[in-house]
Length: 160
Image (cartoon, rainbow, N blue to C red; front, side, top):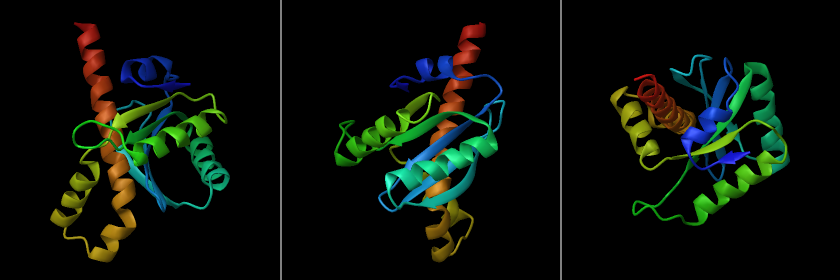
């Protein structure tokens, strides 16, 4: 099932299982994973895109190996909030993925996540080559951390 809102996504997540964050590019997919307590997102790997069936198979391998219970995709909106071809492509990927898994799938506005990842890598004095190797999974970690922080805030509001 695909959720537009984080509240619905969070409600559908099985407890005690990790969440996978994805930054979909045209050539690569950045993958990040959360811990089982949903507090920290960590970069995992960058998957080279081939075709959907192979890409999905690799993602499902990661999901099985890391006991992932839900998937967040960065939704690349334009700066004015509108959605262009990249957002439509992300939504199509999510629809195709949802046909193959019962895991909840959600979206997170990824505006500026790659910019933030690039800035962090520059501050860490990463070489240009190294930045190119890890930028996508670092961006995926920024996307996923945003979701985890939002979920934490929602739990805190609920507990008041």
